[in-house]
Length: 228
Image (cartoon, rainbow, N blue to C red; front, side, top):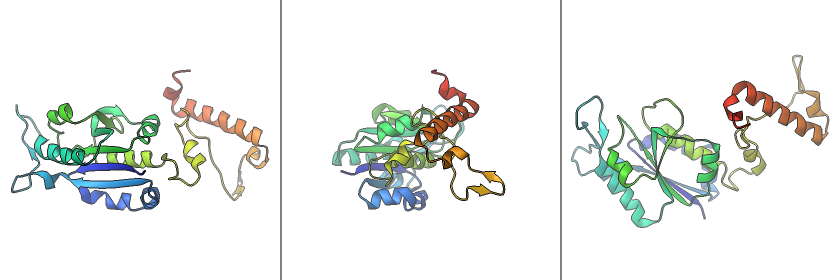
């Protein structure tokens, strides 16, 4: 059974380029993944298709209204069961590889893209089961975050990547950054591939890669080794 991801957004036109190419396209074509993008504006009764309004209490910015989002989510939930409804928000849980692995085991999920100053808090209270962030910065909307999260989830669904070992050896899968990688030519303008990689000795190569992973992680992301 294919995993299904429904994305709720005010800007559906942002998605076809990303979802229609590379690994995501192959995942859909092979039947491992279903991607459905829903325009929240289609669920408003406002004659001008407005989906935002001024915040109660004053302040800068606009707030996404609860009613169109509620109608969209309730329509989807009436058609199938969902493992979770996740809001893309800068104050959410920081998404990482472990979360991608966990979410790849779900059958159906909804990703809600926030925009403007955010969504009416009642959306979170009534529908959202988890908030996700892709970093400590603010984007114009949750669309790019939803794309990134979808891609990270898709690549670890069994069968999506032909060489399954490739996804399992990605950075962060074992809590470390990946070791350096090389391909032909073995000598480029005097810069040679490390001899150990040309040795044909799997044990030495594995030891070298592990050493490089630890070294690179200590230098670039020591926070990943804080548990040591």
